[in-house]
Amino acid sequence: MYEQVVQIYAEGLETGTATFETKIPNWEAWDASHHNFGRIAILENEKMLGWATLSAVSKRAVYAGVAEVSIYVAQDSRGKGVGKKLLTALILESEKNNIWTLQAGIFKENIASINLHLKCGFRKIGFREKVASRNGIWYDNVIMERRSKLIGI
Image (tube, rainbow, N blue to C red; front, top):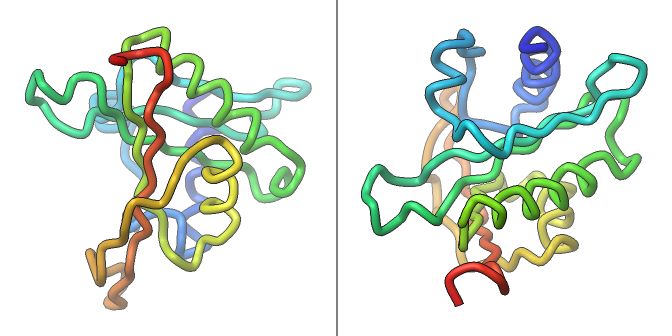
């Protein structure tokens, strides 16, 4: 299954606006960097159309209910509602696991991802100017968050 995750992640890397990473991690590194819950994939005839997962934003206990969202959709499945299904399911799964805030840092050029997050109840809370570089080019990130209406109220 990880082979399909890697394939879709590689397609995201190729866009240049999905992640600052430039290399695909091995399974051990990927597994260690994500929560063991909230790992969601959509399959059609055993082919993965997209995946989503959650990562801790901090090791500090006070931030245990805050997670970073990652969503990747296969190139030939983009624009077909896969991202919305993934993010909607990820929100539900996060709340089942006591996550009260979801956050996302999105390249300002990635309009489709920004719009997807807005449709799923995220709000823009700011941006980080030239927060990191990818292949020698500095990029801004739009910071978005979604606060649960069920957890931590």
